[in-house]
Length: 439
Image 1 (cartoon, helix red, strand yellow):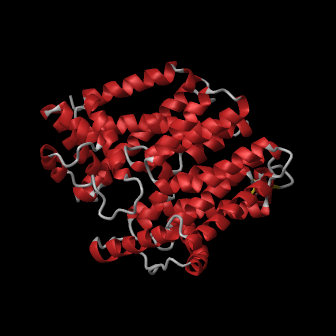
Image 2 (cartoon, rainbow, N blue to C red):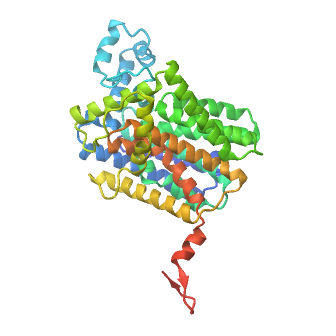
Image 3 (cartoon, rainbow, N blue to C red):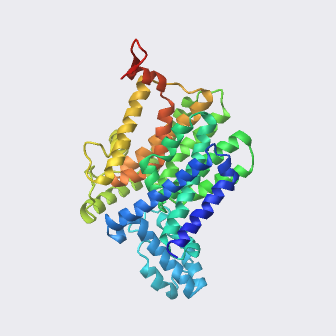
């Protein structure tokens, strides 16, 4: 049963990929889609075995700790469906009958509450619901997550292919095959849910602006719902970029970059005003999160990839001073010259490739047309916003790799699209008098 059930789910999803119009109209062949799906399953299983044999502390492994808590919720249903319902929706929490279950849950409550949505419960609840079809087989969860991840990245792929035709190979590499994206977003972790929310939101808004079909409003609402229950900093980074994207499409006679600059300027001004009138403790929350993260990583957990970034004051001047360093830190770490563990090798290579793309774009820039500039600017500004959040708050290289992952497909794709590859190639490849290529 441990093998048969996962194989059955793989077969079911292959049939869906073969028959459903969403996949048929994706612009990718059935063979490529199946290859990507199976590759995601391999990545999810690799993550499973990494946490099984390399990071052996089960209570510190995200892939297991939320699953184990979900198993407790699922078992409560066998005792009483009413108890499961109350636990799942956090109803009647002071009921003595629920106390044994709450005591057994290790990650239902956060160590520190910042007054924002507890996304631990989101991933635990998703795992608990999947228990009704997996019966506790974690590999079924991996396979379902891989299928959902394929959908999420395919939504992003469809948006880019609308603006840029004949770039299928580039998109397969930059959207689906970036190692960090493939690795962290293929298993049932928060990153997979984030990518689903991002994909739904961007695809829904893009499609609605093009067609005005009301069905896309449902997709937009679903994307907002998903993102609001997981990694709240991602949707905060996404809001001004999405707003700029919509306005830029609506007022196509205006320069896209001017719209993005204006919206982000207003956003920054709003943060500054908010800081002085104290409506929402925005900077205070970020500073507290960073300082608590430092204490937990350096003094309690002894994180292997901890970096000394110093405590952060919740003053405007402190954030202004820290911003350039935060952006650089989030973009470049880990570097290929300071790899501390084997798991950092691929992310370091990714960062080096990202730097090369920036350099190539500077020297061999290819200007997108008016319509294409909107999605490019969206990708760039969303990436910068997310890098800021990650760099300003995260003192652990391993966490930086995971937290910035949602922006990788956007940034790397937009950089690659803004490079004149023919001109770049001509610099390094020239022909001799006999027509042979010389590097």
